[in-house]
Amino acid sequence: MNSRILGLDIGDRRIGVALSDITKTIANPLEVINLGHGTDIFTCLKKIIELHNVSTVILGLPKNMDGTMGPQAKKVTDFGETLKGLFPDKEIDYFDERLSTRQALRTLIEADMSRARRKKVVDKVSAVIILQGYLETLNFKRHKEE
Image (cartoon, rainbow, N blue to C red):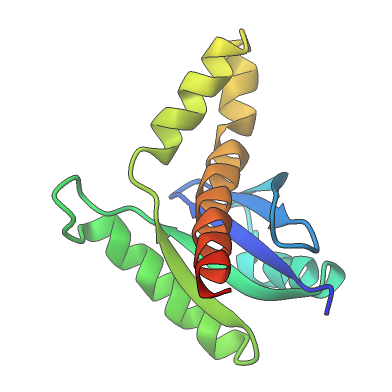
């Protein structure tokens, strides 16, 4: 079918975007969408979804450490509901993203990346971590069923 899965790390100022390969095995960084200044996030996402034949959109769900849903998680689920309305033929799902940004920062620091450069890429690295976790769960379930 050659469709792909899109992973999003939704923040207040930026959205990190990652994309799976066609085998739905590997997550790759795609871009960071800066919000504000008249950016229409849904137009940006529509272009990405059409260009890359996306069938599923995964949103990182920032749960609290105790597993409860806080205000940021509510923003993400509201965003997901808007996506469902705009893209009714696409699957919209969530993946627990606790500590994904911290893990992304740690990885970038270990790579000896400058603070300025880290700030520019941390959101898409977080999106990769979220999407890769989802893909591994998906593939584990698939192999378990075989």
